[in-house]
Amino acid sequence: MNTTNLRDLREEMKKLGFSETLTTQMEDRMIAGEKEFVLHDQVAAQKGHVGIDLHFRQSNSSEFFYLNRLEATRHWGRGLEKGQQYMILGINKDGEIAVMTGADSLREAIRTYQSMSGFKGEVELAAGSSLEDRVRMATMEGGRETYVATEFKSDFDRPELAQVFWLDRGRSFTREQAANLMQGRSVYREDLLSRDGKPYSAWLQLDLEARDRAKEKPIGQEKDGQEQDGPEKGGEEKVQANLPLKKFYDNYGFDLAEVLSAYKIKELEDVDKAELLQAKLKEGNRVAVTVEKDGKETGVMVETSVRYGKLNFYDLKGGIEKREQFEKVQDRKVDKGLEVVRDKARSEKKSLETGQGIGI
Image 1 (cartoon, helix red, strand yellow):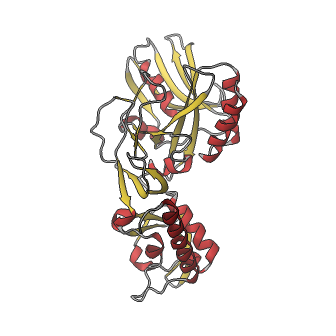
Image 2 (cartoon, one colour):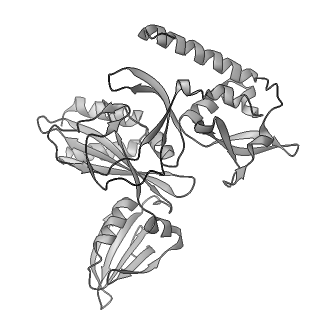
Image 3 (tube, helix red, strand yellow):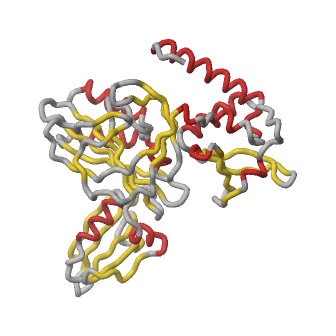
């Protein structure tokens, strides 16, 4: 195992926001001599969770390993708790377990479960830390479902919502950004490259309604504004086709600082809090803020609505709040903290454009 390669991959994992535990798993698999492997992670969503599969492969021409891509899948059921795994059991007519296999991701578990439709007996999909404490998620017999837990019904009934996020020299959507995109939110990136290699910034959002696409498509889809030839020249691997990305460039007119200034959000009165709020929103997060409602300070959640140039507000249980009740009066005086953040952003943008020789 090449120590320089390991160091670079560890740094890549850290930049993308993955845990030290997952990084250690990567190292163990490399030491074990596996040429290709997948690691599984999950991120809690507003409802359910987002599963993330990290695909590693060793080069055909060297000892170097590469993290080729992340595959994110939206699930509406809860994820695994610490120490748990998914179990797929084949139970024969005598009630004995004839087949048992495990899975670390719900996507993998459902696929394995469905592949056993021809088993003569009952097939059970469950989750737990042991056979004794497992919780049934679904069962089928003779290829026909006999039970699906209410919490997981959407995962069986809805078409799978999955997306591939390519890596380019360690640069890609982070763990946090990928999970937010899968929930329909927008992410702002300043490190994008056009097809001809020119840098640009944009808000990005998955077009979740565009599901009429081919089941499979060869590697070579657009990634972050560039074309991809695949992790290995001549590789035969195929992955599911991606949903298209909506791109809202800077000239679209969505200025986050300007949009925020239209609302009575207490955090905007403090420079550091205003800066942190903007950073979290740019990552695609739904963020807790303090507003005034019915004459009292209360906590709500806020996220960007880039397409419509607005913010979306929710109560702490996820219910929709009318944004109009949090708007300022017509003069919309800018809060001190937000004004400082805005001036800083303008200064940094001007310095970047000057350094790159890009006209303003």
